[in-house]
Image (tube, rainbow, N blue to C red):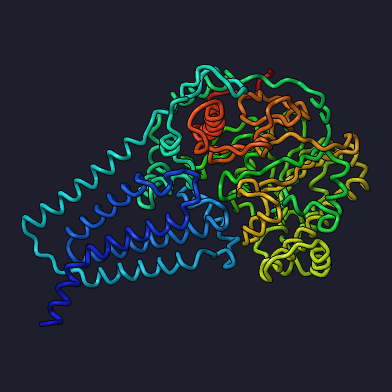
Amino acid sequence: MRKEKIKKVLSAGAVPLYMAALLCLDLSFRAMYGFVGGWKDAAGPTALWFTLLWVCLFGALAFLLPRLIARIFMILTGSVFCILVVVHAVMYHLFGNFFGFPDLLYAGDGAAFFSFSYLQMRKLLLIIVILTFAAIIAAAVFLPRRCYHWKRITAGILGLAISVAGIVLLNQSLLVEVKILDNMTWSVARKGNINADLDPVKLTYTEFDNPNACLPLAGLYQYTFRDLDHTFLSEASRDRAKVVADLDTYFSGRPAHQDNELTGALAGKNVIMIMVESLDSWMLNDAFMPTLSALAKDSLRFDHFYTPLYLNAGTFSTEFTSQTGVIPPISGVSTDAYVENALPAALPALFAQEGYRVNSYHSASPTIYNRGAIHKNLGFESYHSHVEMGMQDYMIDSQLLNGFDLIVDRQQPFYSFIITYSGHGSYTDEYDNIAQPHMEQAKQAVAASGVTGSEDTMEQFTRAVAQIMVTDDFIGGLVDRLEEAGLLEDTVLVIYGDHYCKYLTDTDFLLNLKGVGSRNLLCNTPLLIYNPGLSPRTVEKYGSTVDLYPTICNLFSLNADLRYFVGEDLFSDGEGLVYWRDGSFYDGTEYFDASQSASGAERDRYYEVRNRLDMSWKTFRYNYFLYTDPLLAE
């Protein structure tokens, strides 16, 4: 009799236990990451209401479905959301961003660089995930047999109806119409800002391009389903013709680029553009990178340059933006778009118009990020991997010099885009083949630097230094070969990083090392432009990857109408502003996001920056250059 009572109680409590487990999973996760996103109500009523409604919907389905199907449904939903919580936590630790379904577009290529050292998350959260899953399994096991009668069916359907209606109404209450700003100027105070009265929380929820703000704002379950809809359904349903017309209005209101002291200063010279894997600002010193440090002293050096992570696939993000002047959209595109969309004003296409031979070089296979096809679409003649360059070990950057005769051309000017590899993480013995030749030198340099940290962190730090020394060897060898070939005087080197050294897994260590308080500000990385004929100087203006494209266009007098690109020539008189995918921005004196101000000029400025991001995303998302020619004289 006692066993029967216990079994009856467990059976009656199966669905409530399932619902309670899902509720605790969401609340625990958001409590631990409540600091993310910047909203004062990040753990507030909106997320709580969404979560309660979704938990009730799941519970109603478990209550109504036949027992076997209900058990499968409970275990499936429990598994999916427990895994998602782990993925969110790991990705935030590694990239500083929660997971979004657009990340799946690059997951296959990113998996090629996976390391178990990246699987780090809070132990308490892992325990909660395990307990949650165990509770859901127990609930599924004790789920009673179904005995359908009108009261049960009525209660279940009523619960479903209330939950669905609540989710729909709450969702609709947060959606607002986002229009393009009128009378666009670069000033902070503007007239005709028709977005001035928008609630920044509603704007963020409507655009849904910022996982770090949207997940705390909407809760785990609403975030997941809205992200699915926004990524794969909503964008496809928008009116392309209207968006193109809106973009025409926006770009026509932007000021034309004005010539400055460096306009055309490098026109006609050869260009070798080197995107260095994991090049960070703290690496640029005589001990860690002696060659690049010496080169920096004779270069145009941009100490306030940033490489924002618009995509979690950081290398591809910077690669695409630096070559096109367009910020890759966070959602609403497939990988096919990078092969098929019109990009007539990408740098290789512009240099080809000037009679240059244009090619790209990277040791990895052309199938990684589909570079072989994408680079063709950008205007490159060919993509050259380690095979074509005769590299014995594709990880060793110094072996890129085996392809020196492919990289340069002695008969015509050339534009060569090189992506290095040796600085890539993980910084473990998995990459001993890169690090070992420089480990002793790196240990001595690190010891002399005075940098301290935990044993594991210092091991990673030392390996990062040893690996970037290999890249430094390549840069030194390249300069020497150019000089021997008599090409150095007529060749410009543009050297920049794809992202900060994010594969160092101790983020607090990096924040202290760089002396910043924000993960966004970790994105400060070197940018150098070198040619023996240039007078070296440090450029104080603030800028980011999106500004590199108009800067190169200005230096080489390339034929593109820069109004169509939201970046800014770093030698212009513009304001000098860095902005990240969450809409926050930085000008060297002020770091601002929407949650900091409810009204006034600064809030207007936030909307202007947010609008620039949105316009650049839409340029590519809706294949704008298929309808508009950016190759115009200004």
